[in-house]
Image (cartoon, rainbow, N blue to C red; front, side, top):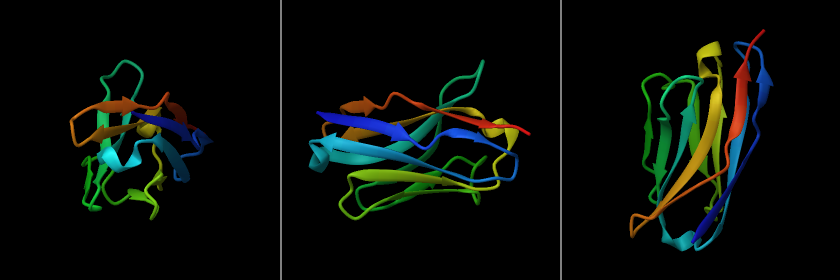
Length: 116
């Protein structure tokens, strides 16, 4: 079992930056891939970025060049550095961890609001 806790959300002006964190605990070694998802009001949840255990990354087209996903060396924390934020980035952001046995865990979500 893996437990996830997100932090770092908040209110930021357009063009600003935020860094989200996702702290993982439990059976960390069982994680094969982690990702950030978001759900905007009235929309479906979508993948923002993902990173594998070998640090291969993938990004949604809408955030390429602006967001960077990373994991610290001990792999207990995942980050999402968000730059040049736009109002359309406003959403609840969730982190997800999927194990080698394809079991997924989700965090509780953190609100990101981009507004002037």
